[in-house]
Length: 562
Image 1 (cartoon, rainbow, N blue to C red):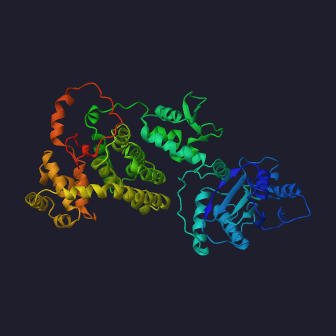
Image 2 (cartoon, rainbow, N blue to C red):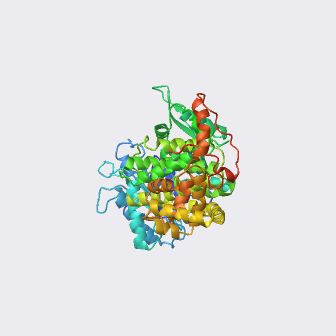
Image 3 (cartoon, helix red, strand yellow):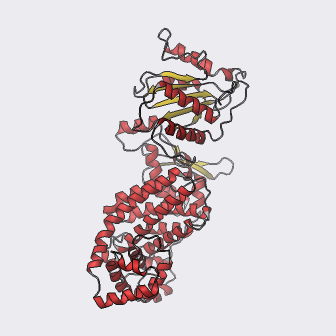
């Protein structure tokens, strides 16, 4: 059951809509199911003797009586409006049940507390099977305004209790950080135009994608404009500087402010996490096409540790940066997996924010790595899978983090992202792991690696060696050895980067951690020329490389791991 509180200034205008035919003739049998006592409330849907206009004006007079008693001085936004809708698949509610819902919602939100004779006047109108509209004048009989602070949250909490009592589908409670839902008119427009999503949702998704990739606020506007989106900056009359903006779809006349798309897309929120000045590329990143992938994977593993650290502000910032990472990963990953990755990024947009204020400096490394990923070469194979594997675990950790703090909607969104990433990982990793297993080194080498595992990680050795992914890990260890690593030391290092106790398949975990390591021999060969260079190197071309460019198949391309 979904309540949606808003305010306005025209009681008569809202009454006309509620008892009219609807924008698409969708209103059937509009009538009042409950009111502030039903005393003297004419029902435009139940009086065949009077004209509709007469009844609408009469009802407006009754509902708005308290504002008239103020001597004509209506307070701003005095019309309180709350549609309440059942979830798809819920059973039919009778008028009597909807009346009970309406009385409980106005009581919970402070519009009409139970037993309060001075409460606001209100009506609840039903014109469809699955929802009602509650309309109230937010002026009490004693001339005071009602206490409606956090009324949207309180309406949600009451609806959760109603769902349990009425046997309805249990929805997730929000924390007032969710983006605004499209209006009925916006949904009708999308349906009329044959669009899968409303303009608000389309703009929101493109705004998130642009914000994830750009380096400053000016680039953000430029990227959106390059997509044909109309950008209208708002300039402060006092300072003469931009302090807001709004967007419209190509050829559309309806503009949406950044905060109307999502709370963290407001101008102030964007400038908090986007640099005001351009950030120069790091030349060493461009010497090895795989380095941006490794840095992003390493920074994502750091985010896993931050979620366990107890620093809520830092964790919140890492979740926001991880959302950017998913958008950029979807942009750079090979084609067959893009749809699922885009779905994961879209789902995690709800998990990226909460009422906890983020420390926007905490996740600077992950945010910067994610931006550089947009300029990196497309490298299918081991490095991409290693990043997806880490992202998979980070999404699950994010779900648990939100769940522990009572963020129900965010936890559900992170779980949805996890399921999409799980499917991507399955599709991408299974053939690679099978190929690695087929290429396992000779038995004597495998025995030597078994001994290295027992020496390096004795507490996990038996589980690693019993894992079905052990043959694949043996091949990866052989390639790491060829790349210049001491396998025992390498195992100690990668095992220490995050505990293995909770890993269901520890050999698989170690395999992808080792895959993300740089090639020491290739790095040594590049080091002199890299150090001698003082001129920033241009980003690597956006070219697709064969799978052999990753450590899982060829160890010749490696940079320095941090």
